[in-house]
Image: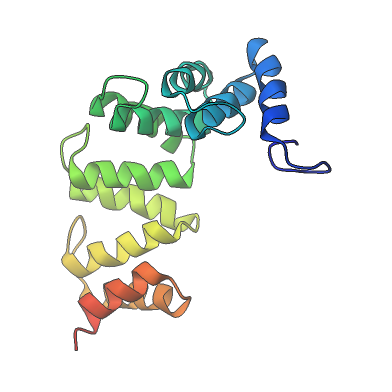
Length: 185
């Protein structure tokens, strides 16, 4: 409540204190929130090692936001030695729980071969799962993959149509992609 200012004035320090108490008693959501606060330096000094410690506890209990952040920390070597394989594993755990951002991130990992052999088809499948839940970045990726024929049979019309719809909604990245791929005048 203090973290987001719901019913009270926003106060990261107070939120940190409450999360610390709940996290100490083993509450995974509080452990995840505490890890996030250490990671972003909200209510406490930024400390990637402590962020990793709390996120790992929450992630091992199945907390999807902690799994996503833990995956990011492994990917970037923040608070832990960089390990793309572990980054993939934690992101996959959250993606399999149906979390759209994790599904999109898994698509990125398959597309680029980060922590897993590069696989355009699997990238497309994960992007599609995220897009079906409304993730606009995943929708844009789907449009680009259709346009380029990566992981799916090439269909430039379908790709441009997907990108155009996002561009018409004011999505800046989609506008750039549309102008570059579909309207290169």
